[in-house]
Image (cartoon, rainbow, N blue to C red; front, side, top):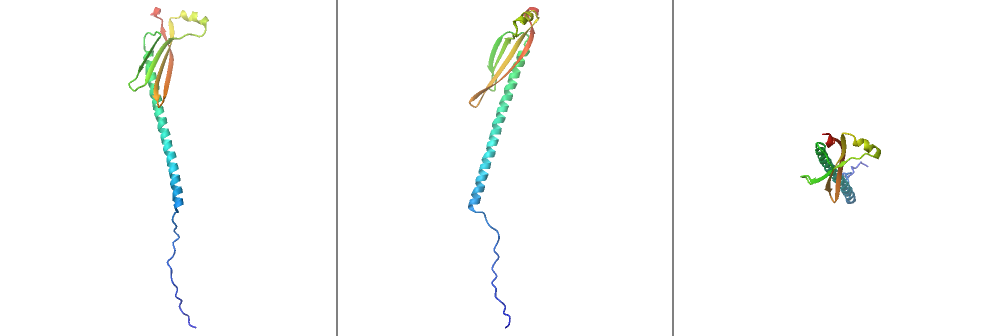
Length: 148
């Protein structure tokens, strides 16, 4: 028997490429959405922290400014003053006679040519629904009036 050529039908090769299922796409979108929200929350938190830091720094600078004004006065006496800066920060300064702890030492201090005052400044501002404040204080010694 002679060899007969066989008729083979050649089918096109099937591709090994497969697509994503709808479920896989939905899971990927959910993961991206959750990640995106978390990243945006971090940006928001960082922005709030930056604003709080800026406000606190500005308040400290205002408090230092008022304290320096008190420190350059030639004569001091007990007093209180308050006001508002142009940017909305409120300030209050206070000059108090400094008292030394022991009453025994008080007599010795009365003999000195100098007296000591406590200089105090408070700067406050509104941060959202809360009021915040910064307080700075120092001591300053000046000649007593009777020794000038």
